[in-house]
Image (cartoon, rainbow, N blue to C red; front, side, top):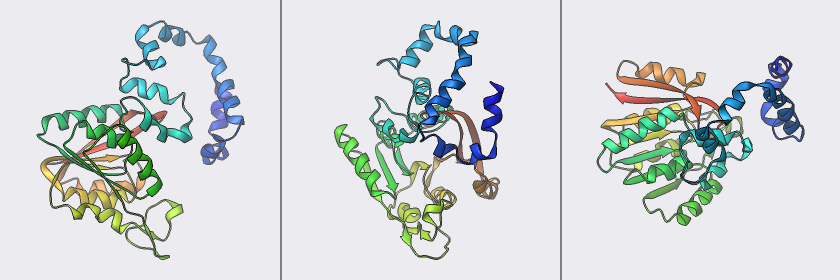
Length: 271
């Protein structure tokens, strides 16, 4: 399907991929790209195996980390947030990182979790931790999460709303997202300071990730881990360079649940 690859590598397509996915033309584009699979023997080989069909069909009782990833290709990529309504939802991160985190929580007595950025990870952590504290900047999203948590009768999650403040000037707590230019996320980043305890796991998966990670390292238990999601972005390199001599950095990259692709998750521990 070389012609399609050439088109997708054009700057216009690369720069507007997100907007193009929202148009009515995009389903036709996907259909045309998929025609070639009729002649691909690998597809028949895959579908002849029951284990693959179970993952593809997303059958109750057959759900696992791989079925979540495969199912993401059949979803509207603009409505990924709906995964909080899935049966047995997983964090939005690389599959191997999920296994690593689960192993860590199982080895920890009465684990306490703090996360910047909530969603499916919040629900998943609640089943494996004594306490989950989640900070979000979006009140509407927090209300959606609260309703889902109530439906599931979960009682060990604390949700915090820390909206950014419009200062109309640049500041040290500014996110790279253009929609929040001139807004300060200082209250969002510093929310963890409201707690006297140390945490066994801290997830950085929201805004101002470098600042959150720096703050989070100071609030980790001796054997705790900091999980930095989507860590391959260039703007995060300086943070990892700054802690490379004092901390162990484990970078994991691969298939990511719900995201139709690959991503990098980095685990940070004390040396």
